[in-house]
Image (cartoon, rainbow, N blue to C red):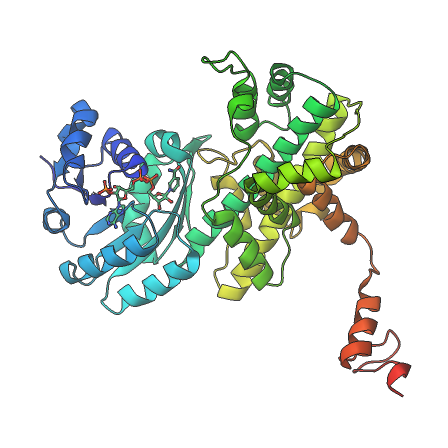
Length: 464
Ligand SMILES: NC(=O)c1ccc[n+]([C@@H]2O[C@H](COP(=O)([O-])OP(=O)(O)OC[C@H]3O[C@@H](n4cnc5c(N)ncnc54)[C@H](OP(=O)(O)O)[C@@H]3O)[C@@H](O)[C@H]2O)c1
């Protein structure tokens, strides 16, 4: 058996899928798992690909099986287990080895871990992996944050297993330490926003326009053949057209309306706010998931405030225009967070490259990303102002405004779609509402303000 090029620790859903992907792409690997019985089970699953796998009983065996400098990819929870793992693995490693955290880590943790392992001369890579199990098995989009040397060693392995978009691998070194995990976090934030705007639209089509789930699925399938084409539209069409075998009802109707979240959407919002940024659509999506968990309160809300909603007349083509505008705005907000973080942490993130590696393999892959990467290559700094999207917004913003006002008028909750308008309408007014805010701050707290006709700090006559 050939010498393994990389060790995989953690053969759960994602680790096993990545390991099989590597073996299938001709990369010899060594594998181990905390619970050792997962290793023979993995080999059974690997079948003929097992010829490329060196099975190891434990972490020490995994390290011993690897040639130096070693590369160990851990696909385990990036929370406390990752810290425990590092405590165990660091004494077994030598200078120049690389540890890769391929889980969904908080980038602050990644930065701290990179600094801690550097003290041992060990490189640390934060690798954002998107695409779920299927992506990991057949080609994920991957966001690499870590040292150049580690990228030189690992880049070819990752390029071999990554999703390909027109023969270009959807993986890149985006910067040092936490850059990859940060970009993955914002990716997930955009994912939240996209899912929420889809869910709001389905609600309007179903309970406002009175369409059946299957008919809405047909509309999404049609939209998925045009500029809105995206993985999330594709699976929405599939889901809406799927029946529940047990009851014969649409499968969406037998699912409890309480959404889960593991934290990446919330992290995006927290980081956006910390960076002095806004991501209103992502905030709305995170809020909507939190509200969805409050089923008892919503039940009571219906009893006290009433559940009545009006009828909507919706033209699917106009709704598509509205969604296209909203999608531009959600990406615009996401990329603004990335740009600000890049400046803050000195990452020099390449926005065009990020859009490119999101074009295949990941959950937010969408046709629009081609235009987004072209816009950034063309020098755009704010997507909502990029000439490439001028027509989309000229047509889509009025459609979005009509959709949101009709929806709100009829009593439908559209927090993500409405917040997109709140943001873009703010950002197109050269003079906004903050003068009064400044006056209030000065009036109650003597905070001062800058006059339009003089430099320096001034106070209002109320302090004379
Ligand atoms: N699922 C997805 O779609 C997805 C997508 C992107 C990223 N991720 C990230 O990928 C990572 C793994 O997720 P998964 O879906 O593969 O989870 P999973 O199927 O539950 O597998 C978890 C793996 O971590 C190991 N593990 C758990 N606690 C451990 C500990 N304290 N010490 C050592 N090993 C430990 C488990 O080992 P045992 O067999 O011994 O329990 C198992 O191998 C997570 O960070 C997750 O956020 C997941």
